[in-house]
Length: 111
Image (cartoon, rainbow, N blue to C red; front, side):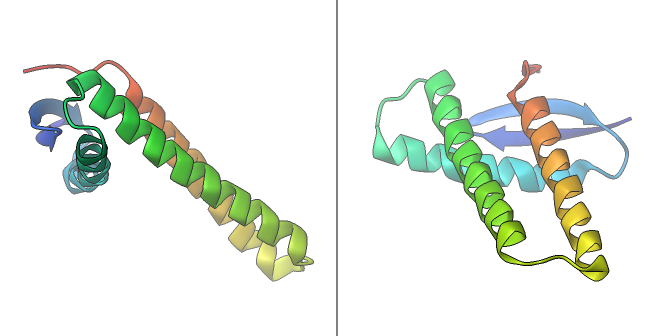
């Protein structure tokens, strides 16, 4: 198991992850950090919990919009055999995003 430190909303979080996932988790933390900064700018004085809540809501909203867009494209285009592979890849990626979102939304281990 590898260890990494993420910096989100002014806090440091030490996490364990599978070897090689450090850069990916750092990238995801960057996405959350940007949304947390947006929340803090829009509503100064938010508590840490509310900042992270709004960051999660912003990200969930983006994910929801992407899912609707993908679903709309699937309905608009008749699928032949070659497009089935692309659709399956999108479904797999969507499932991975949801799983990562659930893992990040779980309890945070403080150092």
